[in-house]
Amino acid sequence: MAKDSKRTVLVTGGAGFIGSHTLVELINAGFEVVAVDNFSNSDDTCLKGVEQIVGRKIPFENIDCCDYEAMEKLFQSYEFDSVIHFAAFKAVGESVEMPLKYYRNNITSFLNVLELMQKYNRSNIVFSSSATVYGETDVLPVTEQTPRMPAISSYGNTKQICEDILRDTVASSKIRGIALRYFNPIGAHPSALIGELPRGVPNNLVPFITQTASGVRECLSVFGNDYPTPDGSCIRDYIDVVDLAKAHVSAISRMVEDKNKQNYEIFNVGTGKGTSVLELVSMFEKVNNLKLNYKIAPRRQGDVVAIYADTTLANIELGWKAERSLEDTLASAWKWEQYIRSKK
Ligand code: WQD
Image (tube, rainbow, N blue to C red; front, side, top):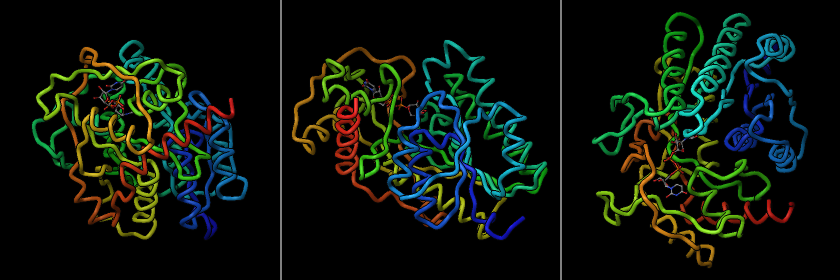
């Protein structure tokens, strides 16, 4: 393999929310990239945005990672030594309605990537895991040692299963892997050229907030104000998407530079700070100088009361820390929403 391939990264799901931000940060850090996506939950808006930000074309292939033959051609055509695997379905509610769709897609694509990495001797993989693997836990903040709970959704279960697939694959091969457990990714690139593009009615809080502010949605429902928290609403750890993207660069660099302590490692990626839904809403109003139409609604099924990360391990081992303030992140989310509306 050519020398440059050591610093070339295949990014699956590269047209998506976290994938597109990670392409930018990889390029900023001097990596070469190859992106694949089948646009099942995205379009080319963010890819074009990435190209505008970095000022060059991104090598891209429209491929479904479940298509083994197409993926094999990709492995034969490009010399990357590392992979960041984002491509997956991620709607929690839909996964409960259509579990087979989630198991087939999220697991098949991951198996294809790992099998091809073995066959074509590729070294490193970062897998997009999720704080959802911790489920409802009494231990706060959660560390990587906090036991995983049985998943409530099929989506969450695919994350647990894929973590286990990675652990076992690493144990029996030369592949090295890092699972990053994301808390709640929000925000957008400061340029507002890339951001989150949910299809239909957003499930997640921040896109619902920004769409309510822009008038696409009439009113935000705050799901529950009778939880055992200081203001009664649920608590989450909201992590800025650019900070999250940088965690991927740190994880890939750790393996490329042979600094990993074990061949399979897990890191929480959050800020370490919990914020309630009502706090987030009022912060959004304040930083963007607007009033949000919202009402208190019944609890949403399946929501955990509170979860936030202990990020000590990522701070020490990855040399990574969330840097952007929640205020700046919420301002970027609003700037992106306005940009997207102006294009439509
Ligand atoms: C956050 C808080 C809601 C919408 C999910 C996945 C997780 C991860 C991120 C994804 C909760 C409240 C929400 C609304 C509200 N993965 N809320 N009104 O549920 O913490 O995590 O997304 O790919 O795996 O489970 O995120 O943004 O949906 O909710 O009051 O209209 O906002 O009840 O307390 P969640 P979320």
